[in-house]
Image (cartoon, rainbow, N blue to C red; front, side, top):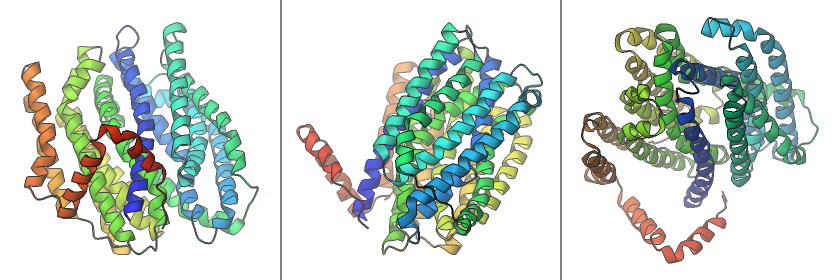
Length: 505
């Protein structure tokens, strides 16, 4: 199991570096997007609505194919025909993306009126549809890279796309004065370039193949996940749709900024862990120590995510003041602890839901996420008129908790794993108290404020020690890790030691 944890850590670091680049690009653009010279507060809110619309559309277009590919690629009955399985998945995705683009693009005007009560944003919506269709195809190829543990290729490719999209976005906004339309045109071109760059890799891993029975089985497995993916995307964005309907675009703008900051946690940590561990969680089905491995993955990933949550929550006020050009966005700091803590449950859900995947009970996932989404909508409707964006943030935190708990409950029924829930509760309570304390510290002057926040962040692991969070073997491993990596002279040897790690089951 130790070997598996090491290979997971290595791939997580590589994926994480790539995902850090994603957020760096996003943060670079925030000062531009929040600058009144280029975009009004309402227009920033419109960007937020278009962004989440693309997220929902991509989830819908994916049709559960990445998950089906992941499950069948390593199935013991099909390991000799992995190229054929990939071909069926990719061809299906191309057909689905093409059909939906042909269907939805002519309706762009109606979508613009439906969301924004005017046709002005129809062209931007067209670009969002095209970008989502191409991205859905890229997702299948990205899944193959993950399955093959091609983490470096994955990260380099996506880093190139981000750099290219960033350059195009700046060009279209600053030189061509295209405004919001330029943002999404850049995404269309960037996604298209990635398809071309990976064409050789795609062809190399493709074999023309079609089996009706396998196709039916993969779709029977993937269709409930399609509904789950769409509902999960809606669960993520229902807050901003609700704010758009029940409040004003400025509220959407503030919420969007807070969400962009806290989404660093999901993209850099949760998604990186998922990218690295997803294939391994499936590969370890049937191994002797698989349940202990799953349990430790949940505990250690929760620890890392919570430490980052505390850091983002503590320094969110300073982050907003640095990246937001206008003071109008500073009030977004109020909801960051709520949104940050919701990521804790997102990570827990990503791990515990594998019990349902392993047992092939994907229909349960669909029901859970639909229920959670409906509940989130109800809570938003009830809380937004009372508490505004804070009400929406509270609804997000509660709905993500319910989503995780339902996945955990039903997963344990079909595939029991001895998760260390008491430790996770201790972790959450301690992290939540420190995270919300930032709201009390913010009014203090800059220098003492930074000192207090830094002390709070550094003290977090030691507070857990006083609460008897760590096992003796874990303390020993931590000491060994510190001793090994604190020696700067041995840095090259330590890095080289990671190259030899293989996941031998």
